[in-house]
Length: 111
Length: 113
Image (cartoon, rainbow over all chains, first blue to last red; front, top):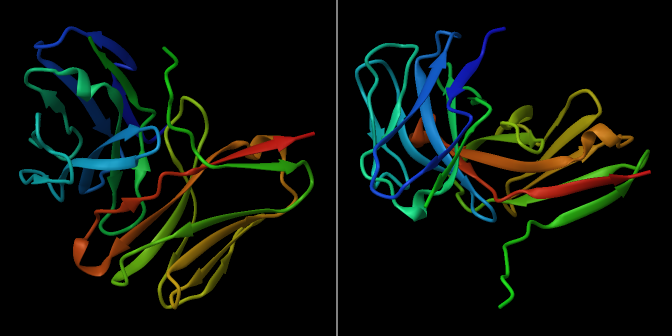
């Protein structure tokens, strides 16, 4: 089934550790995004990529980095995790300026 | 001590009734709007979208209304079913922001028998 695959589904992480959330799409969408979702705040954009080889900062980029080496993969890295990064992370993709297609999320707890 | 958490607005609807979920947006430059449904533990799913050159769009059991004058968006669900229980939120995108959407916090819809 075509769509977005995120891994891991859930992770508990000690503060200060490095963590990479993986995201792969098989829809050949040019644009990909990472959002975090916190109760009462809605989805907030962390980083995005309009096409392979380019990335941009969203609303809450601090503490996160991304890369887009190819069309299908868009990993999100937390270089040194902090408790405030405890959240549910969603990867999404879109074809051009159309609607976003979301993955099932990665629940991250930083202790 | 007691901890206080954030709670989403909740709409309680009886099965078979119609539901209306509202969303206010702030950016007058927004030209594209989407309603998403999110079930517990899952990713958001596209329901319906509307562009700013329209004021109404209908789908299967859903209708989206757009009032640009007061910057208001609503989602109507006809004959609400138990499977409609979820969090619903709107997303807006401005012309010059390409694919970057702004999302509302969401409304929890609870369908009662």
